[in-house]
Each structure stands twice: as structure tokens, then as C-alpha cells.
Image (cartoon, rainbow, N blue to C red; front, side, top):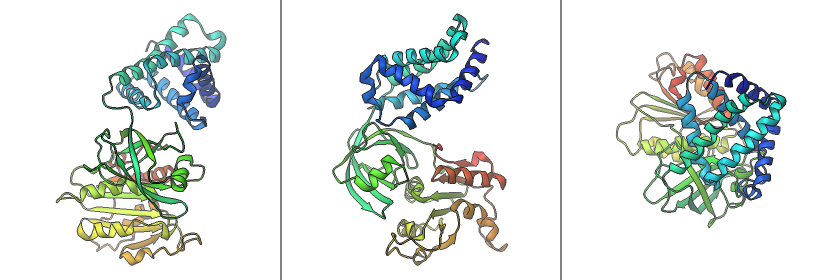
Length: 395
């Protein structure tokens, strides 16, 4: 990017940061005013989408003016373009978005919108929409695929397990990846979910859901999903997996167990696996509903060691009849799962054969974003190399 672009792109970033929602709302208002039919491609409630949109534009403007990392930026935009196929976005729509962005940028800069500034901003905006459009046009395979709900198990008022059978268009994926999901109760609303089992030739899928406060899709799945519902899926993402022969530490919070469960089930198909220690945590002991499955897995796979973690020692009234986790023969500890995992080596006898730190382990974290962020920081404070820690994007 030429030198005049850097200060103006930095100024645009500052203006966006001052009021990101106004910026995003301005762009979408202009877009929908030009082509009202585009409004039907997006969810009714767009506040979360506007937040994400402003963050993406900020990231791209920063990347354009940076001295390096441009290849990563191009790949990011290309992936974004491939993902946007699920909305029904066409090549023509990218030109409309270019116009909407340029008009909003012009409004924000006011009298500073000179010909030189126009050229610099146009170059950056054309990069955004051009790379996305090109990647979408060259993408292979269907933009979306479908699966039918065949079973649903309600674990508690906040948790459920849903099983589906995918249609023939389902893409190949590996255990530990996540996918974009849309349900019939909330059309145009997409969320990322991780399959809790590895892929198989029968197209069977399993998802574990926790209805989080304010979570439109998760709450609807737990309370409203029924057998026969057809879910729509976008692209598969994620690189979280076990590689090599180094010992493994896994830390799972709640339904964040899903991708790690899929990886463990996939590992169980193989003969030779590294020593693996899983810390599986939930708020209440009765929410550790997968301990039975993990017990069977650990019994036949001596490389797997499981520690159960609960934040409280007793269940609330609405968790009725849940078995004591200790009945499965696992060690049960109390506290936040990330804290327990990080401190675990220090609680062992110095004569123990178990590891006394996690420095040489490959580490996989999965769960709520605050838990993953907090656990990652604590691990790094003990000397763990950040390159040894894997997790899905925190969003």
C-alpha cells in the first residue's frame, strides 16, 4: 500500500473504533437502501453481526497498511468470501458492498475526502471485496449442506445432545473441527458448533449444546429442536488436533468437551497414541454427563487419564438424580477447570510418575471464551510455549 494510504487508513480505524455500531449500521443501511432484497439474506437481529463486521473491517484496514503479513490477510479475506456463500451472496453484491463502504468512508472523512484519499481508500476497499468475490467464485463444492435431526436427549434444562444424519453433500472433515450451523427456528442466524464425534461413512453427526443466557440459537436447540428438523450447515473450520508423539493435555469446559471428545474417539481407532490427560469441567457435578462415555473410553485405552472438575460441590435443585461423578472411578476435584488443570502437577507427590509440568505437552483447550483465555494465560505464566497451545477462535 502506498504511503498516503497509511495515515488515512489509520484515521478510518480510529473513527470506526469511536462508534463501531454507527459505522456498521451506516454501511448496511446504504446497502439495503440500494437493494432492499438483500435485507432478507441477513438475520432479523443484526447487532452481533454489526459488531463482527466492524471488527473485520478494522482488522483488514490494519493489515492493509502493515509492512508484512499480507498473505495471511489475503487468505483471511478468501476464507471470508467462501464462507459468505452460505448467505446467498453473489458476485454483484460485492460491488454493492464496495459502493456502500466507500460512501460511508466518505461521510466519515468529510472535507478530508480528497482525490488522493479516495484513491487510497478505494484501493483498500477493492482489495476487500475483490479477494472475497474471487474466492467465492472459485470455491468448489456446495455452499451449504443439510442434516436431519434423528434424536435429541435433554440432559437438563440447560443442556441437550442432538444427533443428525447428513445428506450426501456433506463435506469431508476431521475430528476437532467446527462448522457453521443454521436451524429452522432461527433462519439467517449462523453459529459455530463442534461435532462431538468423528466423521463416519453413515453421515452421523452429534452435537452437545448448552443454552447460554441470551443465546438465541443454543437456547432454541435445547428447548425447541425436534426429530425431523433439518439443519443447514456452512463450511468446516479449525485445525485443532493431536499430532506427533508428545504427551497431550486437554482442558474442556462444559459442552466444550465436544471437539475433544471427537478427537479422543478418533484416537481410539489407532493403536499407538501419546499419553493424554483430560480435565473435564462443569459448574455442577451433575453436569458432567459424559463421564460414563469417558470411563468406557479410558478402560479400553490405557493412554487416556481423566480428571473430573466441578466448580461447586453440590447440584442445584433442578439437576435431579444425577449420579455422583466419583461412581465412575475418576478423580473429582473442585474449582475452575483451567485452574485445576494448571495446578495439577504441583499437587502430585514428587515420587509420582505423572508429569510435574505441562511444558513438553501439546495442549488443547475448548470451552467458553473466558475459560480458554484465562487457562491459556495461566499456562503461559508457568513457562508453556504459546505455540504448544491450540484452541478454536475466541468469539
